[in-house]
Image 1 (cartoon, rainbow, N blue to C red):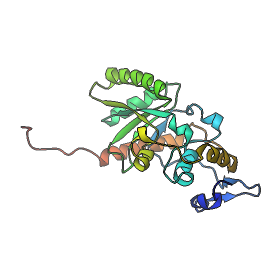
Image 2 (image 1 turned 90 degrees about the horizontal axis):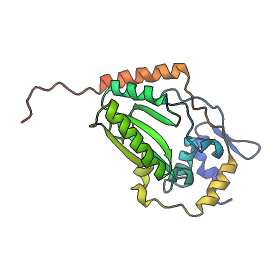
Image 3 (image 1 turned 90 degrees about the vertical axis):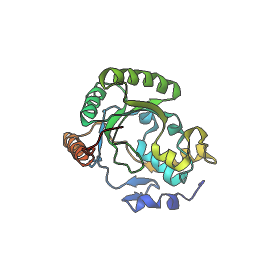
Length: 226
């Protein structure tokens, strides 16, 4: 073994994971995330099916295996076009559009304390070139449907990784990263959750958006700009 996997993955065993008799670590119960602010287009991120996991497992590699000092090699080629809608109406409009697309994307309320935006929409891409092409497509749609003042940008991988590792153009691999990833994937016995959200969860997301919008209204002001 390259590392002490039992020690590294101990935080998971405190959350219901367990080491099976076959020597692999498993989830005791696999559930659909329900208390979520995100509406997902039911298309899996390209390449995840072949990898045999989902983003949750890749995050566990970052947090536990690489000790927040590196991102999984799959994540290193993950790019996201980000749209920053300003109103709930725009969020609903993006959600409707995303439902017609043939690639992975999501939209919802930015409840994460380290993201200084009220709303966010994400369009997943593989590699920088695909990201640049998708940026052009999304920018054009936003200009025509939401307005040219709506912010759109292209970023690499998860915001959480940037919080831990700094600027994404300076990320480096963990020592023996390829070997660790291969060994780790042989130890995890997990099934990727289906990308389609249930109707009850979708209804809940709409209510989350309504509540988020009410609690984050801009105040009425009583002065004129100079």
